[in-house]
Image 1 (cartoon, one colour):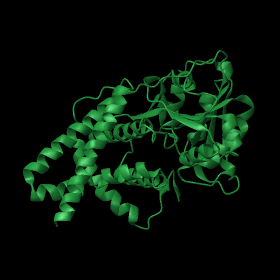
Image 2 (cartoon, one colour; image 1 turned 180 degrees about the vertical axis):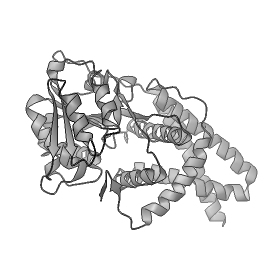
Image 3 (cartoon, helix red, strand yellow; image 1 turned 45 degrees about the vertical axis):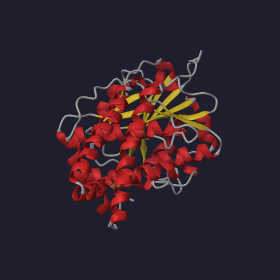
Length: 370
Protein backbone atom coordinates (compact mmCIF):
# COMPACT_ATOMS: atom_id res chain seq x y z
CA UNK A 1 0.00 0.00 0.00
CA UNK A 2 2.88 2.37 0.80
CA UNK A 3 4.21 2.24 -2.76
CA UNK A 4 0.75 3.00 -4.20
CA UNK A 5 0.36 5.89 -1.78
CA UNK A 6 3.75 7.31 -2.74
CA UNK A 7 3.00 6.97 -6.45
CA UNK A 8 -0.37 8.64 -5.93
CA UNK A 9 1.27 11.53 -4.14
CA UNK A 10 3.79 11.89 -6.96
CA UNK A 11 1.04 11.83 -9.59
CA UNK A 12 -0.98 14.50 -7.76
CA UNK A 13 2.14 16.65 -7.40
CA UNK A 14 2.90 16.25 -11.10
CA UNK A 15 -0.60 17.44 -12.05
CA UNK A 16 -0.07 20.55 -9.95
CA UNK A 17 3.37 21.09 -11.46
CA UNK A 18 2.08 20.68 -15.02
CA UNK A 19 -0.67 23.23 -14.40
CA UNK A 20 1.67 25.76 -12.80
CA UNK A 21 4.35 25.40 -15.49
CA UNK A 22 1.66 25.65 -18.17
CA UNK A 23 0.22 28.83 -16.64
CA UNK A 24 3.73 30.32 -16.38
CA UNK A 25 4.56 29.50 -20.00
CA UNK A 26 1.29 31.00 -21.25
CA UNK A 27 1.84 34.19 -19.23
CA UNK A 28 5.49 34.56 -20.23
CA UNK A 29 5.31 33.84 -23.96
CA UNK A 30 3.24 35.83 -26.41
CA UNK A 31 2.46 34.87 -29.98
CA UNK A 32 4.63 36.87 -32.37
CA UNK A 33 3.21 37.09 -35.90
CA UNK A 34 5.32 36.98 -39.01
CA UNK A 35 5.38 40.04 -41.27
CA UNK A 36 2.04 40.66 -42.95
CA UNK A 37 1.80 39.79 -46.62
CA UNK A 38 2.10 42.76 -48.94
CA UNK A 39 -0.33 41.09 -51.33
CA UNK A 40 -3.28 39.28 -49.75
CA UNK A 41 -3.69 35.68 -50.95
CA UNK A 42 -6.76 33.92 -52.24
CA UNK A 43 -8.60 32.07 -49.45
CA UNK A 44 -11.18 29.29 -49.63
CA UNK A 45 -13.21 28.41 -46.54
CA UNK A 46 -14.21 24.74 -46.43
CA UNK A 47 -17.14 23.53 -44.31
CA UNK A 48 -18.25 19.92 -44.08
CA UNK A 49 -21.91 19.84 -43.06
CA UNK A 50 -24.10 16.84 -42.28
CA UNK A 51 -27.47 17.31 -40.55
CA UNK A 52 -26.52 20.81 -39.41
CA UNK A 53 -29.79 22.63 -40.01
CA UNK A 54 -29.80 23.89 -36.42
CA UNK A 55 -26.30 25.39 -36.55
CA UNK A 56 -25.29 26.22 -40.14
CA UNK A 57 -27.04 29.59 -40.37
CA UNK A 58 -25.07 30.86 -37.35
CA UNK A 59 -21.82 29.69 -38.94
CA UNK A 60 -22.48 31.32 -42.31
CA UNK A 61 -23.70 34.57 -40.76
CA UNK A 62 -20.38 34.82 -38.92
CA UNK A 63 -18.53 34.36 -42.23
CA UNK A 64 -20.55 37.23 -43.69
CA UNK A 65 -18.85 39.50 -41.13
CA UNK A 66 -15.28 38.59 -42.09
CA UNK A 67 -12.88 41.46 -42.71
CA UNK A 68 -11.40 40.18 -45.96
CA UNK A 69 -11.76 41.33 -49.58
CA UNK A 70 -14.72 39.44 -51.11
CA UNK A 71 -12.92 39.09 -54.44
CA UNK A 72 -10.17 37.06 -52.69
CA UNK A 73 -12.56 34.88 -50.71
CA UNK A 74 -14.65 31.85 -51.65
CA UNK A 75 -16.80 29.75 -49.34
CA UNK A 76 -17.50 26.07 -50.00
CA UNK A 77 -20.14 24.12 -48.08
CA UNK A 78 -20.25 20.37 -48.55
CA UNK A 79 -23.73 18.96 -47.90
CA UNK A 80 -22.84 15.42 -46.85
CA UNK A 81 -26.04 13.45 -47.56
CA UNK A 82 -27.92 15.43 -44.94
CA UNK A 83 -31.29 14.15 -43.81
CA UNK A 84 -32.58 17.55 -42.72
CA UNK A 85 -32.73 21.06 -44.23
CA UNK A 86 -28.94 21.62 -44.21
CA UNK A 87 -28.68 21.81 -48.01
CA UNK A 88 -31.64 24.14 -48.36
CA UNK A 89 -30.26 26.54 -45.73
CA UNK A 90 -26.80 26.47 -47.31
CA UNK A 91 -28.11 27.18 -50.81
CA UNK A 92 -30.36 30.02 -49.64
CA UNK A 93 -27.55 31.88 -47.88
CA UNK A 94 -24.80 31.09 -50.39
CA UNK A 95 -26.91 32.20 -53.35
CA UNK A 96 -26.77 35.75 -52.01
CA UNK A 97 -22.96 35.89 -52.27
CA UNK A 98 -20.68 35.76 -55.26
CA UNK A 99 -18.07 33.06 -54.74
CA UNK A 100 -20.10 31.08 -52.19
CA UNK A 101 -20.87 27.51 -53.27
CA UNK A 102 -22.72 24.42 -52.09
CA UNK A 103 -21.56 20.99 -53.19
CA UNK A 104 -23.75 17.94 -52.70
CA UNK A 105 -21.52 15.12 -51.54
CA UNK A 106 -23.04 11.81 -52.57
CA UNK A 107 -20.13 9.42 -53.05
CA UNK A 108 -16.87 8.68 -51.26
CA UNK A 109 -13.46 9.28 -52.78
CA UNK A 110 -11.78 5.87 -52.61
CA UNK A 111 -11.29 4.72 -49.01
CA UNK A 112 -11.81 8.12 -47.45
CA UNK A 113 -15.01 8.60 -45.44
CA UNK A 114 -17.01 11.13 -43.47
CA UNK A 115 -15.63 14.62 -42.96
CA UNK A 116 -12.32 13.77 -44.64
CA UNK A 117 -14.22 12.76 -47.79
CA UNK A 118 -16.17 16.03 -47.85
CA UNK A 119 -13.06 18.13 -47.32
CA UNK A 120 -11.21 16.23 -50.04
CA UNK A 121 -13.91 17.06 -52.58
CA UNK A 122 -14.26 20.67 -51.42
CA UNK A 123 -10.51 21.23 -51.63
CA UNK A 124 -10.41 19.87 -55.17
CA UNK A 125 -13.22 22.20 -56.25
CA UNK A 126 -11.79 25.22 -54.41
CA UNK A 127 -8.16 24.66 -55.41
CA UNK A 128 -8.10 26.90 -58.50
CA UNK A 129 -9.43 29.82 -56.45
CA UNK A 130 -7.17 29.72 -53.39
CA UNK A 131 -3.67 29.77 -51.97
CA UNK A 132 -4.91 28.79 -48.51
CA UNK A 133 -7.70 26.53 -47.25
CA UNK A 134 -9.41 27.70 -44.08
CA UNK A 135 -11.34 24.87 -42.43
CA UNK A 136 -14.10 25.20 -39.86
CA UNK A 137 -17.24 23.32 -38.78
CA UNK A 138 -20.91 24.09 -39.19
CA UNK A 139 -21.35 24.60 -35.42
CA UNK A 140 -18.56 27.20 -35.28
CA UNK A 141 -18.76 31.00 -35.40
CA UNK A 142 -15.43 32.65 -36.22
CA UNK A 143 -14.50 36.23 -35.34
CA UNK A 144 -14.34 38.89 -38.09
CA UNK A 145 -10.51 39.12 -37.93
CA UNK A 146 -10.10 35.35 -38.33
CA UNK A 147 -8.54 35.16 -41.79
CA UNK A 148 -6.22 38.16 -41.52
CA UNK A 149 -4.96 37.13 -38.08
CA UNK A 150 -4.39 33.48 -38.98
CA UNK A 151 -2.42 34.48 -42.08
CA UNK A 152 0.01 36.47 -39.91
CA UNK A 153 1.42 33.25 -38.44
CA UNK A 154 2.36 31.65 -41.74
CA UNK A 155 5.95 31.67 -42.93
CA UNK A 156 7.42 29.76 -45.89
CA UNK A 157 8.07 26.79 -43.58
CA UNK A 158 4.64 26.74 -41.88
CA UNK A 159 1.98 24.55 -43.50
CA UNK A 160 -0.80 24.66 -40.90
CA UNK A 161 -1.89 27.37 -38.47
CA UNK A 162 -4.36 26.49 -35.72
CA UNK A 163 -6.58 29.01 -34.04
CA UNK A 164 -8.05 28.45 -30.58
CA UNK A 165 -11.66 27.44 -30.02
CA UNK A 166 -13.85 28.59 -27.13
CA UNK A 167 -17.04 26.85 -26.01
CA UNK A 168 -20.06 29.10 -25.60
CA UNK A 169 -21.14 28.91 -21.95
CA UNK A 170 -24.49 29.47 -20.31
CA UNK A 171 -25.78 26.37 -18.55
CA UNK A 172 -23.76 24.40 -15.98
CA UNK A 173 -23.07 21.68 -18.53
CA UNK A 174 -21.87 24.07 -21.24
CA UNK A 175 -19.80 26.12 -18.77
CA UNK A 176 -18.05 22.93 -17.68
CA UNK A 177 -17.18 22.22 -21.31
CA UNK A 178 -15.91 25.79 -21.74
CA UNK A 179 -13.61 25.31 -18.75
CA UNK A 180 -12.55 21.89 -20.03
CA UNK A 181 -11.65 23.14 -23.52
CA UNK A 182 -9.73 26.11 -22.07
CA UNK A 183 -7.76 23.71 -19.87
CA UNK A 184 -7.01 21.24 -22.68
CA UNK A 185 -6.11 23.84 -25.32
CA UNK A 186 -4.13 25.78 -22.73
CA UNK A 187 -2.03 22.69 -22.05
CA UNK A 188 -1.64 22.06 -25.79
CA UNK A 189 -0.44 25.63 -26.33
CA UNK A 190 1.88 25.45 -23.31
CA UNK A 191 3.40 22.26 -24.71
CA UNK A 192 4.43 24.15 -27.85
CA UNK A 193 6.36 26.60 -25.64
CA UNK A 194 8.50 24.00 -23.84
CA UNK A 195 12.23 24.38 -24.53
CA UNK A 196 13.52 21.70 -26.95
CA UNK A 197 10.35 19.58 -26.63
CA UNK A 198 7.95 22.27 -27.72
CA UNK A 199 6.05 21.83 -30.97
CA UNK A 200 2.44 21.91 -32.14
CA UNK A 201 1.00 18.48 -31.41
CA UNK A 202 -2.03 18.39 -33.69
CA UNK A 203 -4.30 20.37 -35.98
CA UNK A 204 -7.58 21.77 -34.67
CA UNK A 205 -10.09 20.71 -37.29
CA UNK A 206 -12.76 23.29 -36.48
CA UNK A 207 -10.36 26.24 -36.57
CA UNK A 208 -7.38 25.80 -38.87
CA UNK A 209 -5.75 27.12 -42.03
CA UNK A 210 -3.67 25.03 -44.45
CA UNK A 211 -1.30 26.22 -47.15
CA UNK A 212 -2.62 24.74 -50.40
CA UNK A 213 0.82 23.79 -51.69
CA UNK A 214 1.50 21.75 -48.53
CA UNK A 215 -1.93 20.13 -48.69
CA UNK A 216 -1.30 19.10 -52.28
CA UNK A 217 2.22 17.92 -51.43
CA UNK A 218 0.78 15.18 -49.19
CA UNK A 219 -1.83 14.25 -51.80
CA UNK A 220 -4.88 15.68 -50.04
CA UNK A 221 -7.25 13.83 -47.72
CA UNK A 222 -8.04 11.28 -50.41
CA UNK A 223 -4.43 10.08 -50.51
CA UNK A 224 -3.46 10.00 -46.84
CA UNK A 225 -4.47 7.22 -44.39
CA UNK A 226 -8.10 7.57 -43.31
CA UNK A 227 -8.63 8.57 -39.70
CA UNK A 228 -11.70 9.62 -37.78
CA UNK A 229 -9.43 12.37 -36.41
CA UNK A 230 -8.69 13.65 -39.89
CA UNK A 231 -7.14 16.90 -38.64
CA UNK A 232 -4.47 15.04 -36.67
CA UNK A 233 -3.67 12.78 -39.63
CA UNK A 234 -3.20 15.78 -41.92
CA UNK A 235 -0.94 17.37 -39.31
CA UNK A 236 1.11 14.19 -39.07
CA UNK A 237 1.51 13.90 -42.83
CA UNK A 238 2.66 17.48 -43.40
CA UNK A 239 5.15 17.37 -40.52
CA UNK A 240 6.59 14.12 -41.86
CA UNK A 241 7.43 16.01 -45.03
CA UNK A 242 9.35 18.65 -43.13
CA UNK A 243 6.69 21.34 -42.84
CA UNK A 244 6.04 23.17 -39.59
CA UNK A 245 2.75 23.94 -37.85
CA UNK A 246 1.78 26.72 -35.46
CA UNK A 247 -0.87 27.12 -32.74
CA UNK A 248 -1.95 30.77 -32.50
CA UNK A 249 -3.63 31.64 -29.22
CA UNK A 250 -4.74 35.25 -29.67
CA UNK A 251 -8.14 36.94 -29.80
CA UNK A 252 -8.14 37.36 -33.57
CA UNK A 253 -7.78 33.61 -34.18
CA UNK A 254 -10.50 32.41 -31.84
CA UNK A 255 -13.76 30.76 -32.83
CA UNK A 256 -16.82 29.89 -30.78
CA UNK A 257 -18.20 26.36 -30.77
CA UNK A 258 -21.53 25.14 -29.49
CA UNK A 259 -21.28 22.67 -26.59
CA UNK A 260 -22.29 19.03 -26.71
CA UNK A 261 -25.98 18.90 -25.81
CA UNK A 262 -25.91 15.77 -23.66
CA UNK A 263 -23.74 13.10 -22.05
CA UNK A 264 -24.11 10.63 -24.93
CA UNK A 265 -22.91 13.15 -27.51
CA UNK A 266 -20.08 14.22 -25.21
CA UNK A 267 -18.86 10.65 -24.65
CA UNK A 268 -18.77 9.89 -28.37
CA UNK A 269 -16.94 13.18 -28.99
CA UNK A 270 -14.30 12.38 -26.36
CA UNK A 271 -13.86 8.79 -27.51
CA UNK A 272 -13.14 10.10 -31.01
CA UNK A 273 -10.62 12.55 -29.60
CA UNK A 274 -8.93 9.87 -27.51
CA UNK A 275 -8.42 7.80 -30.65
CA UNK A 276 -6.21 10.58 -31.98
CA UNK A 277 -4.68 11.41 -28.59
CA UNK A 278 -3.12 7.96 -28.33
CA UNK A 279 -0.92 8.86 -31.33
CA UNK A 280 0.42 12.09 -29.81
CA UNK A 281 4.09 12.50 -28.79
CA UNK A 282 4.98 10.40 -25.73
CA UNK A 283 5.53 13.38 -23.37
CA UNK A 284 2.06 14.72 -24.20
CA UNK A 285 0.44 11.29 -23.79
CA UNK A 286 2.15 10.98 -20.41
CA UNK A 287 0.87 14.43 -19.44
CA UNK A 288 -2.69 13.49 -20.38
CA UNK A 289 -2.44 10.14 -18.57
CA UNK A 290 -1.24 11.81 -15.38
CA UNK A 291 -4.14 14.26 -15.57
CA UNK A 292 -6.57 11.35 -16.05
CA UNK A 293 -5.18 9.54 -12.99
CA UNK A 294 -5.61 12.55 -10.71
CA UNK A 295 -8.94 11.56 -9.16
CA UNK A 296 -8.09 7.98 -8.10
CA UNK A 297 -4.74 9.21 -6.80
CA UNK A 298 -6.12 12.11 -4.76
CA UNK A 299 -8.82 9.86 -3.28
CA UNK A 300 -6.14 7.48 -2.04
CA UNK A 301 -4.16 10.33 -0.49
CA UNK A 302 -7.31 11.79 1.10
CA UNK A 303 -8.18 8.42 2.63
CA UNK A 304 -4.83 7.99 4.38
CA UNK A 305 -3.87 11.62 4.98
CA UNK A 306 -7.01 13.80 4.89
CA UNK A 307 -5.30 17.07 5.79
CA UNK A 308 -2.42 16.67 3.33
CA UNK A 309 -4.82 15.46 0.65
CA UNK A 310 -7.12 18.41 1.22
CA UNK A 311 -4.24 20.89 0.95
CA UNK A 312 -3.00 19.23 -2.27
CA UNK A 313 -6.50 19.33 -3.72
CA UNK A 314 -6.85 23.05 -3.00
CA UNK A 315 -3.46 23.72 -4.58
CA UNK A 316 -4.54 21.71 -7.61
CA UNK A 317 -7.72 23.80 -7.94
CA UNK A 318 -5.67 27.00 -7.78
CA UNK A 319 -3.06 25.81 -10.29
CA UNK A 320 -5.81 24.64 -12.65
CA UNK A 321 -7.59 27.97 -12.43
CA UNK A 322 -4.37 29.86 -13.14
CA UNK A 323 -3.85 27.76 -16.28
CA UNK A 324 -7.43 28.27 -17.48
CA UNK A 325 -7.21 31.97 -16.65
CA UNK A 326 -4.09 32.44 -18.75
CA UNK A 327 -5.56 30.36 -21.58
CA UNK A 328 -8.70 32.51 -21.76
CA UNK A 329 -6.97 35.85 -21.16
CA UNK A 330 -4.78 35.29 -24.22
CA UNK A 331 -8.06 35.22 -26.18
CA UNK A 332 -9.46 38.33 -24.46
CA UNK A 333 -12.05 36.11 -22.79
CA UNK A 334 -13.08 36.68 -19.19
CA UNK A 335 -11.82 33.85 -16.95
CA UNK A 336 -14.39 34.59 -14.24
CA UNK A 337 -13.95 33.05 -10.81
CA UNK A 338 -12.69 29.49 -10.12
CA UNK A 339 -15.40 27.22 -11.44
CA UNK A 340 -15.56 24.59 -8.70
CA UNK A 341 -18.55 22.87 -10.29
CA UNK A 342 -16.14 21.72 -12.95
CA UNK A 343 -14.59 19.22 -10.52
CA UNK A 344 -17.82 17.22 -10.24
CA UNK A 345 -18.19 17.30 -14.02
CA UNK A 346 -14.57 16.25 -14.52
CA UNK A 347 -14.81 13.40 -12.02
CA UNK A 348 -18.02 11.99 -13.49
CA UNK A 349 -16.74 12.40 -17.06
CA UNK A 350 -13.44 10.68 -16.20
CA UNK A 351 -15.21 7.64 -14.77
CA UNK A 352 -17.77 7.51 -17.59
CA UNK A 353 -15.12 7.98 -20.26
CA UNK A 354 -12.93 5.20 -18.86
CA UNK A 355 -15.84 2.75 -19.02
CA UNK A 356 -17.08 3.99 -22.40
CA UNK A 357 -13.64 3.84 -24.00
CA UNK A 358 -13.06 0.17 -23.16
CA UNK A 359 -16.56 -0.92 -24.15
CA UNK A 360 -16.84 -2.36 -27.68
CA UNK A 361 -19.07 0.53 -28.78
CA UNK A 362 -18.48 2.18 -32.15
CA UNK A 363 -18.07 5.93 -32.26
CA UNK A 364 -21.22 7.69 -33.43
CA UNK A 365 -20.47 10.90 -35.30
CA UNK A 366 -22.89 12.89 -37.44
CA UNK A 367 -25.21 9.91 -37.67
CA UNK A 368 -22.53 7.44 -38.79
CA UNK A 369 -20.71 4.66 -36.97
CA UNK A 370 -16.90 4.35 -36.99
